Image (cartoon, rainbow, N blue to C red; front, top):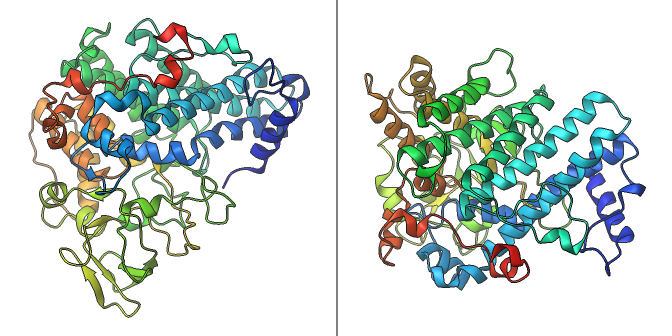
Length: 504
């Protein structure tokens, strides 16, 4: 749940602004940054921005809707249909892209405020480092998401305090753009500790190491697969794979890191009662007790179909127990081809985490697919203690499994890489990966394992984009997309280019 200090700072923002001279939402630092509580409030205010409904939903949406993982419903908004079918003519005015871009920069500006002000404060040094490290991480996290979606974007490395400050130019190259991300994450790693236990809604050193590993893997694979623009960047592919393995290894193969690990119970990962489980390196902080959406979540409604009668029950794995859930809006519909062909027989990630049946309170099947249940749906986002539409479900921004598979792909077929892949497969009820694969075959195997393990968590688009395969999605082929250049980046939203002459 959002920290109360975020609202204190928001109130200060509103009372300290001069709207004639400064953009909305800025405040006078002279009246703030005095105490540890101020520093914590400013830090929590950074995280507050990514909980906005327009951003939190877009994380999953942009990471899966324009692939063969998800389909939109028939009467979806035009914005959603355009993204699903890659209708480029409408992208500059696309609402989802515009909001994603906007809230990324709100996050960046709030992070910049902490980076500029907290280091000079006379507060406990360990807290000062922690708050500043979190700000560096969140700035890097926002630019990481912007770079994967838009390529070169405007660079703001200080607080935007006047209208003139908003007209920043684009990074000169992808090397420069990604260089800022790498530098910020290195600083976050230097400043942040490992938490004694996961803290939902906040990040620590493991998150920074994990995101830096994902950064190096993204770049190394994009260049290896000759993805346009990335193939021209100035680094060595093997060097960046090695760095990806190094930083992922600091999370999955490091005796000093004892907070995070593979959760042996597949269902436990997605139990909303345990957001501090060992898998959750970075997870949003939302709770059903919140007063407005963003404080609570409705993301479960997006995946679940409309089911007449409202409350239905879902079977818990292979146990004989059932939990209730509300019905949904059918916005994120499981692609039937994905459901039928992507998983091996006996894979619990299909059998347990994608529902083809729902039950009544007595455990009797009340709807099944195909039949009155319109599609088999993802049940990773279920809150059995929902209050109306209010739930504690939340996007999984970084899981230990993601970093374990990042390590495996980067390192190649080492003993440790096989150990991690096999542990993930065994948890899903599957046998070990084939032994003796060469590096290229092993990496392809791991990439496909990522599709199954991280399904519906906002990853598949980026894995396909960095390996030069996004243009092969069936919906995109039908729209005449013929190569990776066509789907490499979204255009910067027109609301930004219209106001900033330096990014036309």
